[in-house]
Image 1 (tube, rainbow, N blue to C red):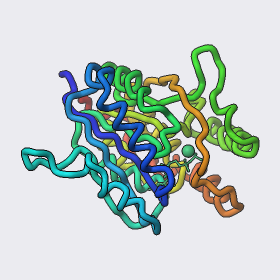
Image 2: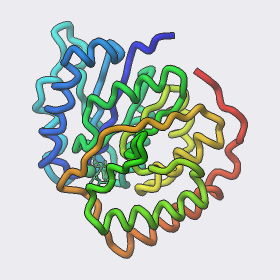
Image 3: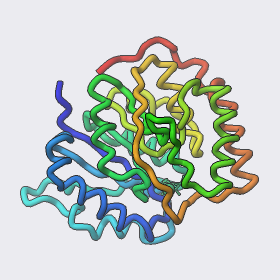
Image 4: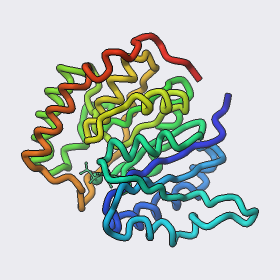
Length: 260
Ligand SMILES: Nc1nc2c(ncn2[C@@H]2O[C@H](COP(=O)(O)OP(=O)(O)O)[C@@H](O)[C@H]2O)c(=O)[nH]1
Ligand SMILES: [Mg+2]
């Protein structure tokens, strides 16, 4: 069946400075002919703000797309506010709150340009999960534009993640992933990790549950104003979360989950 609706979940934590420009870019694309021709008719954007102390939610409330439509139905943009617990729990809340046929999450800074929704959505025709990847078909890696310390952190992270839980998926941390509703609800209902390791956990669960997974090379560029602060506490949290993933899910049946 042709999907008729899509939700784009944008986790946002203290994004006052970047969210307005991000939403401008996103809606400019959604209103362009290319998007109308290729994306489902009903596209909604759900910003998940988990306890920002700045004007993140106000930015959303003041946008024209958040106003009710002429027929009284809700606008196509809304913000959901949840207690602060990290990117993983914000994405989880948004994925479970949507009942669209297809559900994608993306970074609010539009590090992945919105036109990359087209290949991501196309992959969901015959897959349940589509993982954006900054590694291109020719082997080049767009993460090369990141600052050196982030690349080094990324390599250390990947060495641990690949040995332990994600197998052949080379770019686990790309913040651009799409799911059918059935896969999104099944996976995120099980997902437990609150930190940035949640991406690895979702991939682990998707493999374990037997979903069809597409790796979709996407364009990406490093954007300034990253919310990530490298600190010893974070490194410990990340290592701990990576190591405990299999134990967290030892009771999740490896059998193939319900299909669309
Ligand atoms: N809701 C929520 N979003 C977060 C949190 N941490 C990061 N994000 C969001 O995750 C996305 C990626 O964050 P960013 O700082 O650009 O990460 P980087 O590009 O990997 O350095 C952005 O949309 C952030 O607002 C968090 O604790 N809560
Ligand atoms: Mg970013």
